Image (cartoon, rainbow, N blue to C red; front, side, top):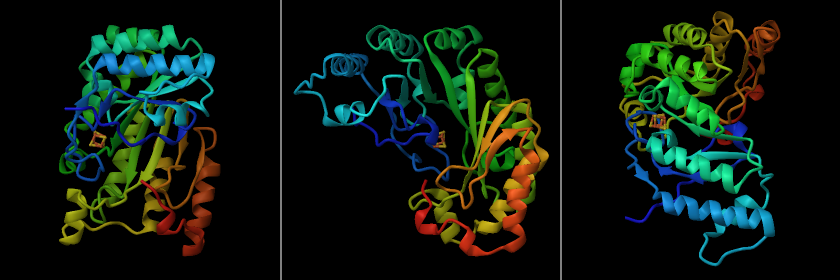
Length: 310
Ligand code: SF4
């Protein structure tokens, strides 16, 4: 089967990266809220990956376009500063370890200006590797993992089909950090629904504290047609929280978490309000910003639904 180049789904902070697909889909395609739900994982042939790196290298060095190379390669490359690469797709860290190393070595050789490579990885992808293997990847510039934590409540993780328990999530996060890899995690406001809201927020603050990541981002649940959670909402078995409740959850998380040095943000397109700052230093200021909005409860202060993204 021909490899299908995935759409670009990336963390907001990777906007300057070159998007190099190693896989399409996600190996853990069971998350009930996610657009990757039910996707079929494809592993890209390594020679195909190398051909794209060759074409990119030639373009960056001499501005040459090769006829057989997809236009998207040059569309991304023309605005690229040569410094960052993001491996697609939903969990490119599942790419077989020996091949992952080979691709990284090739990136280093052909694109020497690259400073860092990033990827989404599931906790399972991280736990499958030894500490030494993770250090090897870091040595080859794969230096940031984006991992979806989603919730600190085992019941919620199980219900959404995350495939791991909170303890495994914590172990994976710590393992990545111990290998010197920068860890950026996301949690999802509203994932516990109305009934589980308080527990979800409090336990999510706890798991973030335990993992103690370098970056933490809060997203707001967006119900995507075709996913099980959307169906549950339609059938009345999942009750989504209100936009203002999502801000209350955010406040609970910021209030109750404790970090060594973490950049925390709700800048993602799915959120109703953006707050950002370094924790612990900016905690009081961030809480004040949220309290100001929660005190007035004026819907016009929130991002309108049609502007919210996934
Ligand atoms: S592991 Fe991540 S990308 Fe894969 S289905 Fe779950 S949330 Fe989506």
